Image (cartoon, rainbow, N blue to C red; front, top):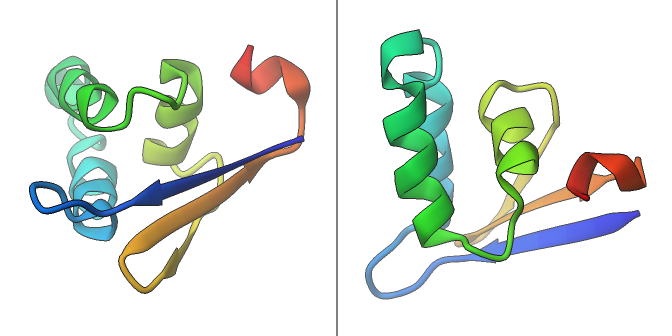
Length: 78
């Protein structure tokens, strides 16, 4: 099990960035560009995990200016 804790910085507000990504992920033609931007903002998170978060296949929670989610299956973040 892995717990990811995406923190905001001066340049990136994690909750708003993830919300923007979730909204935009509905449009297939935008997905690759969104993934590239968000993966650059949060390089410690594997792209496969980000895809699951943005597609709402993996739940997340917002705590203050942070986004937190847990990956139960070790294969999901390999």
